[in-house]
Every structure is written in structure tokens, then in C-alpha cells.
Length: 565
Image (cartoon, rainbow, N blue to C red; front, side, top):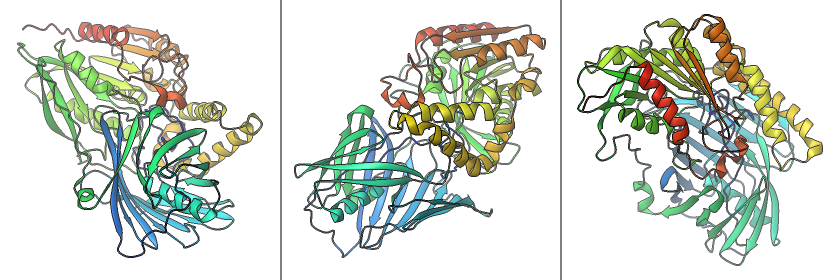
């Protein structure tokens, strides 16, 4: 099952977030905060007359989830009579392991989990548990060594717990359906987010080898075997293919590492680098260096939006969305080097994730700038910053304290406090959700806001973000600044760009340029509406030349990039 879920540090939402993708604080227990993806579920249904599962040796298998041509996740599963255990590795996200307790009558009374950072030997960043009774649900989560937070909510029907990207937990709904009997079944999942987000699910059987499961208005067809287990299928609306692998082959499957290298015949080289920080951890990344040029080169450091993201700012839900790889390729062909870094806890990057704030992430970017200034190929006086979403908030933090920064690009950056942004995003997501009846939307907004304040609103990153006002920092920026904004952005709304422009100019910045692109969303992808819940419908995530051209031309001008083959 695949649900792009809201997180405590909203991915490309507040203020950054594509979807992309998981929170930098690795907070799986998170509220219905802003997200950059649709609420969609992939699941499977069972054959009503299927035989019972074997009660002997444990079943070991894996689910491989592919979007387009990209393998985005692998879930390894061990199924026993009294438990289902899983380990999920998703590209560009922290790892997560879980154990779901099983009962004969189809109940799942508890689910415990652990969230891991980077590296095979990484220690848990967060632990927690969900306890499901007949009339209430209790969710507890906390950082390792910290005091866990517990939220108890009245809820009937004993829902099936769910963690994003887990098809094995989806199979538990199949068991519940078999026990219920009939030709269809209506049940409920409980998404591990905030105090638990209930999701209505309806199973319909189609012949003896396939079925539909409809959740939040989205229906998916899957192949099933004689035991009702998911064998595979395709979710056409999301271009997702799911395959089950059993036996010895399941133990050999790995997600694989993304290709961060230069394409064939590129006029630049791509070097794997590690960047030391003052906090003592290392950041992994790629430095692209134009070939065949004389003299020292200008360079750009990219800054991701909110949510733990890799150096490409990859979003699995949107085909071909790797904006920082695209930027590095474009600038590399214009004589500009680019340093793009993995966030803390992604790939080989270390560092404290659970208690870090945007100010800490700004220090990571300062480390990247310092690293470039040690490189013989790079001109230390011609280093620029490019920040997307939350990165558009962090970039000014760095530029305001470093007068040697040569240029700053704010790519859909915020002008409002986090509280104002989050309140809008939460309300907007509820009001734009067509599966919620109109008469229930006001109460759903209130419940969402209350859940947020009682859970993830207390996390260190979120507390900092909610209180942070970008304008005082912007008033200190004298660096030449380019402000780019999508005209249909419903995450960092377009009226914020002129506020940033005015703030900079009124404070004495003499070199400020702003441009708003019509029909471009928060990802700068063509989108006439820009509603985050519809990102899953986007067909191509490549940013067009109408955006990349002016952006590149401005950087070439400000960095005096004059390639000499």
C-alpha cells in the first residue's frame, strides 16, 4: 500500500515539500499537516473462498514498488501465525521496521515501530507503538532517549494499523475481509500519523484472481493468489507497479543506489564528496565540475525543501522530478559548478535529525559553502545559494550572515510565519478533499488542527518553524537576489513573493529581481490548479525551459560565468 502522507515536517509544504517526500526529524507520528501529494492508497483484496494461511514455518517475502522505471521502495516481510514483521526501505527516506501483533479473529491489537537514519548500522531515531482496543486507539512515539508522547482517541471498529508503503499490513485487511464473509467488505485502516488517521476502505471481489480496494475515493486492482495474497498489480493513475518476490530471491533484493553521476558525454564531471560540519557529522553529496575551462569556477549550493530528501530533491510520486539534478546539468553546461547535498539521515549523511531545526540545517549549508571555498577549482568569491521552499527560508539565513555569498535564488520561499502557512495548508487540504462531505469539512478542519497542535506541533523543528518570521532575516540580506514563484502554488502561495521583494528593497538591497510563472505549482511544474492533493496526477516533473532559462541566465550574469572551452 502506498499513501503519500502528511508529516511533522511537511515535505515541500511548510514551507518546502514534494512530495516529495519524509520529515527531516524522522517523525513518522505526524499530524495531517501540509503535503505535496494526494491522499491515495494502494492495497489488495482477497478471494472470499481462499484457504487459510499456512500455520507452519514463517513466510518470508518482499514487495517491490516501482513508479515508472524507478524502484522507489522495497518491503521485506516475515509472516507468522501471531505476527507480521516488516522492514521498509524507500528511496530518499529513513528506514522503518515494524511488528504487528495478530489475533485469530482478525484483530491487530498492537503495532510497534522503529525509524532509522542513514547507514546499515544506524541506530533508531524514533520508536513508538499503536495500541488498538475495541473502543479507543492509543498512539505513543518519541525520540530515542527522550520522553515519549501519548495520544488516546475514541475509535470503534478495531481498525487495521497502516504504515506508509506497507503492502504486508494491507494484506491484513484481506484476512479481515475473509473472516467477515460476503461478496464485499467495508473496513477501516488507521494511518500512523498524528493520533492516527482513520481511512475508510471497501473491498470488492472480481472473479477468482483479482479484486479492488477503494480508499479515499481511489480504487486499485490487484492480482491475488489462491490464498488471497497480493501477487502484484498496477496502479495506472500513479504509474505504480507492485511485485511480490518470495523465497531466496526476496533476501537478495535491494533498493539500489540512485545514479548521481554525470550523463554520458556531459561537458562536466560529477564527483562524490563528503562535507564535514562544525557539529561533527558528515554530509554526502555530489559536486559537478564543468570540464575544459580555464581559471576558477563559480558554484551554486542547493538547499532542499522540508522533509528528509536526497541531493536531487527526488519525489517518487512525480515522474522525472529531480530538480537539483536538472539544475546541476543545466548550470554545468553554462560553466557553473553545483554542490548538491543529502539531508541529514539520507544516504551517507549523518547528524542529529530528531531535534534539529531550520537553523541547524542552515549550519549544514554553511558547511557546504566552506567546503567549496577549500576547493582549488572554485572561486570563493563567486558562490551562490539556491533554496527551494524551506530552502528558500534557509538561504536567506545563510546569506544574511555571510557577506561573501555572491547570489541568492529563492525558489518558492515563504514570507509568512510557519503558523500562518500551516493553518492555510491544513484547511486547504481538507476543503479540497472531495472525499469529505461538505457538511463535515468544518469539523474535519478543527479536528485536524487540534491533532496537529497536540502531536507534531510540539516537535522541535515544527516549534521553530511555527514561530519563525522570515522577514527580519530578509531585511539583513544585501546579496543580489532572484525570487521565483509559481502562480498556482497552493503550498507557499504566490502573494508571498512580492512581500519578499518589497522587504528586501525597503531594507536597502539594491539588486532584487522577482518573477511569477503562470500555471506553475510549488514544484514549478505546469499545473493550472496547483492543489497538492493532485500532484499524483502530474505526468512529467521536469521543469520547463521557460523557468530554467531565466533562472540560468540570471545566475550566469551574477556569477560572471564565462565558459572558455
